[in-house]
Image (cartoon, rainbow, N blue to C red; front, side, top):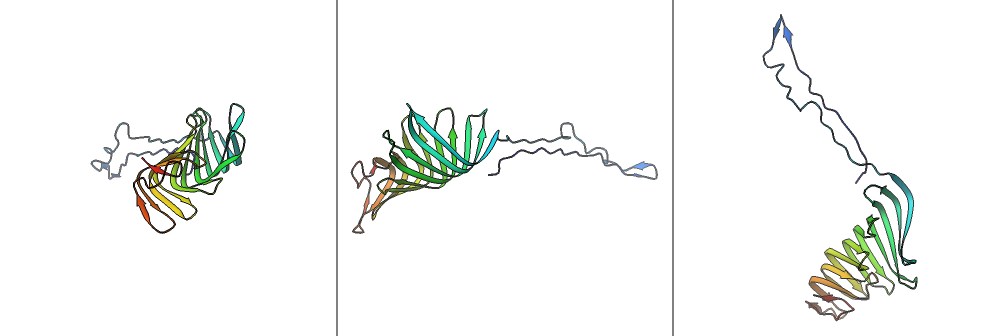
Length: 202
């Protein structure tokens, strides 16, 4: 999505053809009130920043950091949009919990909530991987969630389904519906085949 603004003016002139003192009928009747000028605008960002980095803290401790190739800041909307993002989540002890990569990121600067879209991959510190098309971070609950199809990979085990809610380190989470699990032996388990803490289906 290109962020920008443009205006254009469309003028519909009166078309008149005079030949031998005669006006061709209808040439002056194409103009309609309110149809002279058409205008369209889109908001411009207040700032465009390359090699962007931001850190979110809570009670003096680092919650997460975001790095991006380019960021667009909209002051009045308390909104920040970023392209090609990497988000690192931290524990209260300052240890890395997981790393999120995505094509696009969006931060509500008022609430601290975040959204990631496009080739979203979250890699936990213990090697568990979550893949989905979109993901949100709720600053109040300190959890990540998705309404899209999801895949969770742990060693040779794979969980798939729709909808996700859990901790950003992927230590405890739920796949909300249509869960299927393929375990090491190649057996497929459906509907709640894993215990809580290693992926559940509610």
